Figure 1: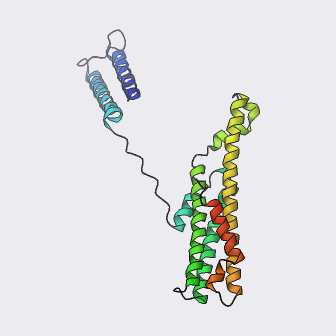
Figure 2: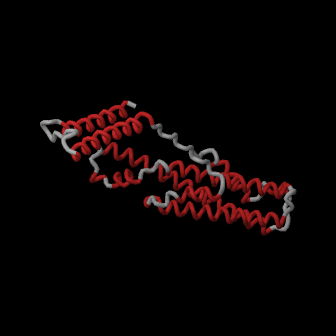
Figure 3: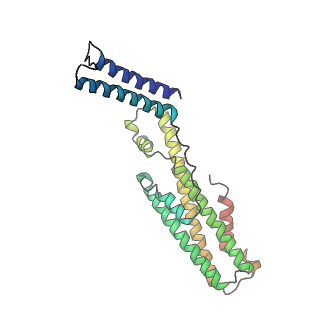
Length: 245
């Protein structure tokens, strides 16, 4: 608020200075009534000054800045793709963004294929069907959680600052500051890489699950837990679901 008053004072001083220069006898010395032209100029100057002051008062003291709209939570697959695509302009992260978009497309394909296979092989009311669907949805949630975690980090990524740190020879910052900044960026890239690796592993587990489901003629619900791919998926969920931020 204090800054706004300073700006308003600057505007008032500027307007006053212009009026003094134009109207003072020792300077330009324009006077109302000397001639139609000078009278018009004086009136125009005074009206313009008044409008400028009123506008400055409105902008700086009256007009309120609307509150920033809350970030809309991502719900649909399309919303996740759009959220990732908005960062395609970050050249430093081009390969990571492209891979993430590719993974999103492959996840949708895997889930549709898995649902189709399950609907062909099992009745939706069967325990086996419900078990497979439940596990698939768990890894799908983990996948999207990784995407949200990546987006939260990417929103804070300052590409210009990162590039300046890479040019250490041209930086005027102390070496200690440069090293600490570099450590922060190293952690950032490590997190992004880990999230992408986890999502790639999720896609691989879904592929294995599809292979095992299509390979066998029947399932004993009690044996599902002992399937290798199911154990791998369960282990993956337990290892990573609580460590995404």
